[in-house]
Image (tube, rainbow, N blue to C red; front, side):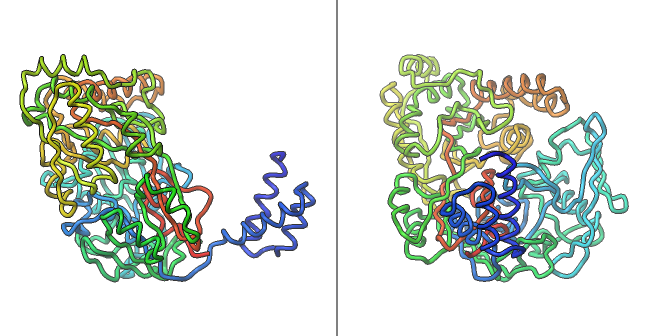
Length: 536
C-alpha cells in the first residue's frame, strides 16, 4: 500500500474510533483508497474492537510482590510496586508506548549546551487526589527525599550528580556537577513518584498522588486496589472504573487464574507453557522484546567470589544456549555478562560472545585455589525457571570440575531475605532505556542496588570513572566508545553472570484492548496497563 493511502487509512481509523465517522463511511473511504471490500470490512471491525471504552473492574495477576512491600518509594524493589507506582502516582517524565521519552508532570524541559543545567516547566492544572494543585515545590521535595545523606533509596544513585535542585516559580531548576544528556530519562524512574509536600517535605508512605487511580486498599504481598481518578489530567486514558493488582508469585497459580478467568491479565508467563495458554479460546499471548535480563549476581566482597579467577571460571562454565532453549524455550537471546541489550543505543556488539569453555573454566578454577561446593541460592520468585536454570548451571559446571550446590529458597520473602544478601543468587532486571540509567541502578559504587557489591576492584574504580565521563560526553561516537569499555569491564571483572535476555510474555483475556504500540521497558505495557488498557 502506498504511504499516502496508508496515512489516509490511519486518519480514517482514528475518526472511526472517535465516532467522527460511521462504519459505513470508513468502509467506503477504504475502498476508495484501493482496499478490497473484505479487507475494508475486517479493518473496520478491528478498529471498532480496538476503540477504548470506559468502565469495568480490571484485575491483573503479577509474579511479584512481598509482605515487606511499602508505599515508601525508596523501598520499591519489584514489579508489583512498579505497577502500583504508576497506578497511584505520576513522574516528571515517562517512557511512552513507542519507547520514546515524553514529559509527564512537566510540560517541557531544556538544558544548557553542556547538559549541566536543566529547566523543567511544571504542568499546570494537575491536582493530587486530595485536591491540592501540583507545584514546583512538590516536585523538589519528592526528589529530595531520595537525595539526602541518610537516604536509603534504591534510586539515590540516579540523583547523585545533582548539586542544586530548587523551585523557581512554575519551573524546577536542576544544576548537575557534570553534564548528563540522559537526565530527563532518569526522572522517569518508578521510584521518583511525585507527592504533595508540606514545608519542604513529603510523607513517603502517603497514598496520595496525581495518578490515574486513587488509593482504596493496599495489603502488602497480596493486592492493591484503586478507583479511577475523575480529575486525571491525561485525556483518553485510565479507562477502568477500578483496578485490582494481585500478587500471585507461583507461576502455576498465576496461569491457572488466567485460564479460569479469575484475572484479566498476567505477566511472566512460563515460556514452556506459552503454547498451552495460547490454545485457551479466551486468552491471547502478548510478547514484547526489550531489556529484561536474568542474572546470577556474585557478591565480590564475599569469599569465594572476591577471587577474579573463580568468577571467570563460573562465567565460562555456563551453557548459555542451553538456558535460552530449555528455560526460555527460545523466547529470548544470549547474554554476555553485562546488562546492556541489543535494544539499547550503545550495545557493545563488538565484544565477543562468551561461550561454554570447559578447559578455560577448569584452568581459572584451578588458579583460584578454591575447593569444595559453591552455594547458589535460587527461587522461581526471581524468574520462572530460576531453580531449573541453577540446576543446569550446576550440571555444566560439574563438567568443568566445579561443584555447585543449589539452595532452593522459599519464594515468599526472597527479595528481602536472599537477593542482595546471599553471596550468590538468582535475580532478574527489567533493564533500563539508557546505559547510564542501567549502570546507575545496579553497578555504580554508590547505588543501594549494586547486588554484586562491585565497588573496590581496579576494574570497578575505572568503570565508575567512565560512567561519569560518558554522562557529560555529547559526541555520540566518543560516548559509544566509553559505554563499550564500561560493558567490557563489567563482563570481565564484575560479579554479574548474565546468561540470557528474556522476552516479556503476558496472557490477556481477549476482552482486554490495547494500542498497537505496547511498551517493552517494563512488563505490562511499561507497567502502565492500568492507565493504557481497556475492556473491549
